[in-house]
Image (tube, rainbow, N blue to C red; front, side):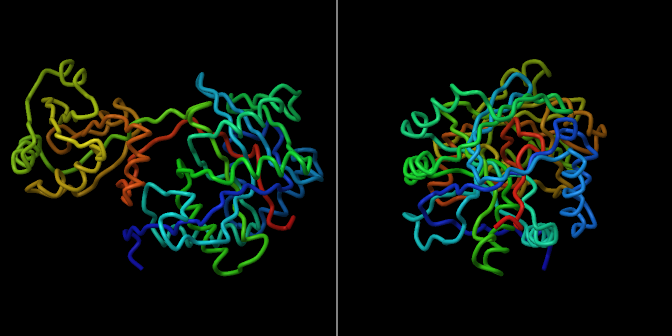
Length: 374
């Protein structure tokens, strides 16, 4: 299959459920350490044995009793809190009304298939996919007394993130949480390919443990994730060709001085530069359309010379450092709005690849799920 092909991953049918699991947790000195991330690399079949060895050395904690975990982490001055559990992925939605988990980007089937094979060999979900939703008051009410108790784990990791983890184990509490989450719907913030890999494993071998996949559910109204822009660098086209493309699709293009151009970057304004000249592009957007959609669906196709490559950068400085004067363009995009992303997925559309950057994400190793436990 062509590795550039992008498809829509399947939708899950409700209710949204997070099952308890026996969490694996690396020692704080290993979390955030690049060498720990490399430990989940080839040969994948050796990863489970490697973790068993770490447990014997006191470098890994393995809970004896299943739990749904409340995980709070702080990074870069932002605190995020979410529920971590084994997401029920056993039922596919047959119509829109049944959907409870919404992808907002497509996936490359080849990449998803490779991830599924890795997880099958490791017999692990190494890290939770990140889900975000507008939380219900009933869920917050249940978690408030949990937060008032002493965490089961509290530490700073090797990468500088601060973590607090509470295990919710009592059957009565888990049942109440299950009931409170039942009507929830969530957006995939990070982990689209791992989500699709979960579904591939479940379809191949239905039944526990593959009926479940590790997930973290964050309440955007409680501890919101920061939603940042991802900028583009187009190799090949010139700024004059970009002006020509903008004119062809009726988009206002104006050359400006650098400070003025950057100051105008906003929901309806893009900024472009070749490293020498700067310009703004004004968009006429409806409340259900994002600027990144216009870029990929209209502006780039209208270029007289197609880019030989499009790369993605999370900061303006990183994008600008990629420019080779006269041979490429940095296209600076505004950060998307969370409610706009919700409106787009509700309208049955997906955003282009790398349209959103939900931050911060927890370092790998705080909570891992072993498929051998179930």
